Image 1: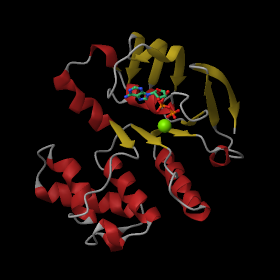
Image 2: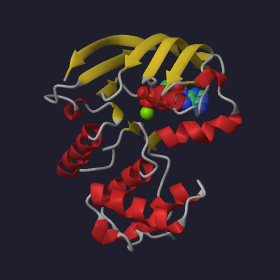
Image 3: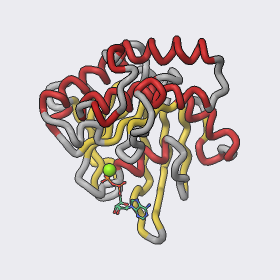
Image 4: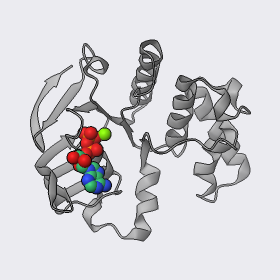
Length: 220
Ligand SMILES: Nc1ncnc2c1ncn2[C@@H]1O[C@H](COP(=O)(O)OP(=O)(O)O)[C@@H](O)[C@H]1O
Ligand SMILES: [Mg+2]
C-alpha cells in the first residue's frame, strides 16, 4: 500500500531522510517513531505528496508519488486521509460543515454529502454534535472531527501526525481506540508519534527512525 525505495529528502542542503526503504502492507496499522526532528512529519508529507523526494521511489495506493502531475494530486488525496496538527478546523463552520467541505470540493450531490457526513459522524461517535461549532467542543471531540473530515472521502490510507499531541491520557486512549476501529474496517493506518506510551503493548508494528534512517523495528 505504501512503498519507499531508497528515498532521500533534503530541505535546502540538509538531508532529513537518507536512503529509506519501507513497506506498509494494505490493512496494517503501524507506528513511526523517533525523537523530535527525526523526520517523521517529513516522511508522512512525502506519502501525501506535500513534499517530493530528491531521490528514490514512493508508491502509495498504486500512485508513483514522484511522477504525479499537479492535476492528479487531488485524486491521491481522496485516497489518503490526513490528521495533521496544522490542518485546523474552521471555527465559523459547524462540525457538519467542516466535514462536508471535504466533499463539496468533490462536486457531490447534497443528499449524498449529508448521508456520508452523517455516517462518518456516527463512526467517530459525534452524531449529537453535528450542529455545534468547533470552539464549543473539547480537545478530544475536535480531534474526532478532524478524523471524521479525513475519513469522509473513504480513503484507503489514513495518516496521522502526533494525533494525541494536545490531549490528556484518557482522551488519547479513546482516540487510539478510534484509529483501531478505522483500521478494523480495512483502512491502512500510519501514525507518527514521539510518544512511546501510544504503542507499548499494542502488538502492532513500530518503525523507529533515527539519524535520517530506519533504526529498527519492533512489535509494540
Ligand atoms: N519545510 C522545512 N524546511 C526546512 N527544514 C525543515 C522543514 N520541515 C522540516 N525541516 C527540518 O527537517 C528535520 C525533520 O523534521 P520533521 O520531519 O518535522 O521531524 P519530526 O516530525 O520527526 O519532528 C528537522 O531538522 C526540521 O527542522
Ligand atoms: Mg513532527
